[in-house]
Length: 140
Image (tube, rainbow, N blue to C red):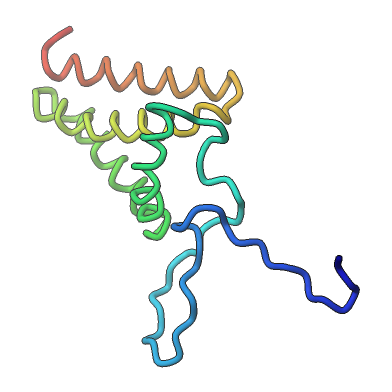
């Protein structure tokens, strides 16, 4: 049983990628990186099959993206989107495809926690990008 003199137990994140490595005495100073957000759930509770597999495979890329500067991913996505809007041939379609893949990937991962308005917005953005790519490839 707990006594009032015992220190409270520290909760350890459930996923190994969310845990911080133990401090080393003679280690070089770490790069300036953002720490992972607090929380116990890294994956959708009760997920099975394809969703569980995609979430597991997405954990490392998500942690990598989280540790990059906040402005990097949006800057790259906006640059590719602008290139897709400006270039009216197949090269514009190729520029839009990574943006489409990134948006659909994040929408899939966040889908269980979204409200209907958020889901509608993600479907609308993905539809716009699909139509943009199709026009650049000459399919429409």
